[in-house]
Image 1 (cartoon, rainbow, N blue to C red):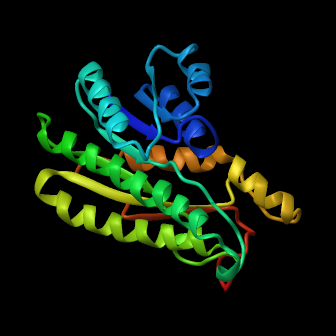
Image 2: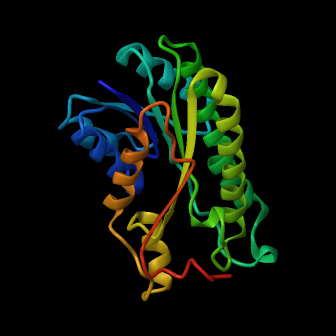
Image 3: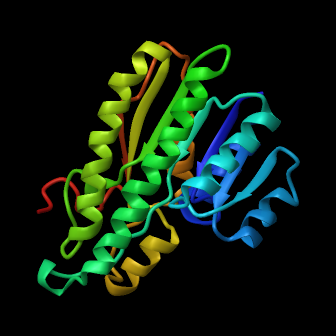
Length: 237
């Protein structure tokens, strides 16, 4: 049975992805802060394991990864998904602590998860695995007033490229999925301010992650963009 750890698994894209992988017969480790939300999944599926912790807590994250690997036998895929949008507005209206919180979750948290997954994949037998980073459309083009989130997601693109390069020697592939306007809690907050926003069902993003994860070791989706068809991405500035 293939195994995956999903961060940010309690809601939105993470939860939808967990449900799609469980339906496909995977063993799924669920990382998020809200244990009650994770139990809603584990209570109805024996192949789901709740690993409640904060992605910015390196000690708790290490314990979660080690526990899952010991229980499941190996780690085939990490979906590095947890993230927050943070404060919106022009840069001179953004509080510094708000910016730092976004970097803490969206960069440091994703770095911790990738570091732990890389180490596990490098030392397991047979060696190798796949890391899928959740980038976002904002890894390419920003929304207005999104300097915190956009800065963090551009950093994730650099992380993806570095992991792709450094993972070659250990049969560790890394790819990035850039998702636009999937119906999640984060997008719901944005849509409340922009009611005419075009969105898509979150299941389309989840199935795209499954496609990336199910590729054979010799193939990799380096970057995938999946988005609501009519969202203003092409040409937005």
